[in-house]
Structures are given as structure tokens and as C-alpha cells.
Length: 399
Image (cartoon, rainbow, N blue to C red):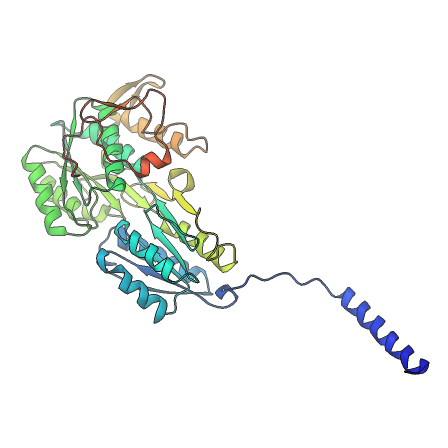
């Protein structure tokens, strides 16, 4: 090659290198479906119109779909727990879902099987404890709110008999019954809590039967874990007939079903968990390789749950005076009304340091055996695997 030809080539290369060097550095972009649309699919155990658990999940699905323009969603409702794998196959193969949320404890093993079958997809299971590289878990838990409900129930019962209509004897439900019972007994040490099991998440007919059976035995305050407003409606019917029965709602706003009898309840903000998960998937922070230790546990401090029978109304105003009239003595707070105690405990549990927890010892089980030593608290693992009833619960826990 001649010297005259070589010189222009060198000059061109130098100019090209300078131009490249002057270009702004490219920001690495995450790989995966987040570069375009992201499709998230939801599998529900109940109907979306249950006004309970499934209704709350579906409300959150609609919120995040409106919030994120890059998000597309689909759902299946009233899916039997034993049939979840078939629906998971359909969502992955036919619906082409990138992320699948399964929203019942009984979906856990089926979700894990699907995660192993489809390792390139992302799965999140609600309320369970099994995880995989492409499968995380999440829960917005009510045990603190059930405790607050229990304080009010203990103050309002005239018979000293409180009832609980329960779905399934799994740790989540047992934890909530125990927290409720601890609250009841804190202000009314002689009161008892009786449980009726439905063995179903959604069965309004059985819920009515159980509530009425408890009332027939002298129960005058009811809480529940069942995905309909039936228990609230039963309490309202008895109250309007002149036999006051008070209730606490579950998961969704139910004040409209018990204006005269609903005291408070538990409300959930699933959208806060779904927002966080979906944004992190979209940004490539969550992948099919790094979810084995991802476990969301949103309680009062994380604003995943809220006290009240309707959003923004922690206690039905009709019950403010009766709750203020009942005074209790607390070792640290002195004499205090139950109304004020509820809000003090709420303040303590919302505090980042979690200044109070219902599952602080000493705690005994219903046989009188000490389960939590004085000053100790149950760990998260112990809370999520609890299989015993606290003292004061006279119901049976099926094994």
C-alpha cells in the first residue's frame, strides 16, 4: 500500500475514534419483556364480586393496570385450589403471561410446580412460604388489625362470649384468630372466643349458619375470615330486630352492610405490593433468577393494611362513646379508655421500631402451656407457621 493511500486511512480511523469517544455513554437497558408491554396474570380462588379477599385483589389489579401504561393484565376467578396447575398452564402457554400471581394458600404447591416447569417465567404466590429462583412470595397481613378489633370486641361484649367464623385451619387464619383473642382478653380477661370452621373460603350459606349458631349460644360479637359480607349482614339483622350483635368486617369495605352493627374491620392495600413487584420486574430488578429470597410482608408499618370498616374510617362513629366509656388499666399507660388504647396501640405498631406487638409474652396456649416467654416475641417464621390456639379460645383446632 502506498504512503499516500495509508495517510487518509489513518486520518479516517482517528476521526472515527474521536467521534465514538465523544458520544454519550449508553445506559445499560434491562433484558426481558419490560422493554415493551408486560403482561401480568392473576389467579383467584373466589369470585371477584365476593366483597372480600378476591374482590380486594381484583381492585388492586385494576389500580395497577390504570397506573402503568406498559402493563396488560388478565385474570381467572373461582379457581379450585386442586385445579390451579391447569390454569397456570393456560396462562403461560395460551395467554403468554410474563408474571403470574396466585392468590390463595392452597395454590402454593401448584405454583411451585409451574415455576419449575416454566423456568423462564416469573411467579408470585400470596400467603405461602415456598419459593424458587423464579418464584417469590407476598402477604399483606392483618394480625395487628385483628388485635385492635379484639380490643373493641372485648369492650363491647355483654355476654363475655365472642365468636369467630373461620375459613380453613391454616397458619394465616390461626394467627388472626389468636391476635383477635389476645385483644379481647386484654380488656376482658374472662371473655372467651369460640370458633366455627367452614372449610371454605367463600360460602355465604355456611357462614350464615355458623354465625347464627354462635349467636344462639350467647355470642354477641362476631369476627370472621370468609370472603363475603354475610357475617356482617347477620349481625345487622339481629341488631335491627332488637338483639344487638356487633361485627368486624374482613378485607374489603363492608360498612354499607352493617351501618348499625359494624364496629370496625380490616382493610387491605394489595396495590402497594403489586406496584412494587411489577415495577421491579419491568425495570429488570426482579428476574427469573433472583426471587428465591423475595418475600413481601406488609403490615401496618408498610401501609399494606388499614384499620376500619371503610377506608378512612377506623371506627364507626356510633361506637366511639361506648368504647370511651370502658376503661382499662395498662402497666405502662395507666388508666385509659379502650377507644384511646386502640389508637395508642395503632400508633405503637405503625412506628418503624414496632413498639408493641400482640404476640409478646407471656403467652399460653389453650391448654395452659407457656408458648412465649415474658418479653419475647414470636418470630416471623413462628407467626407464619403457628398451629396452636392462645388461652381464652375455646374452639377446636383441627389437625
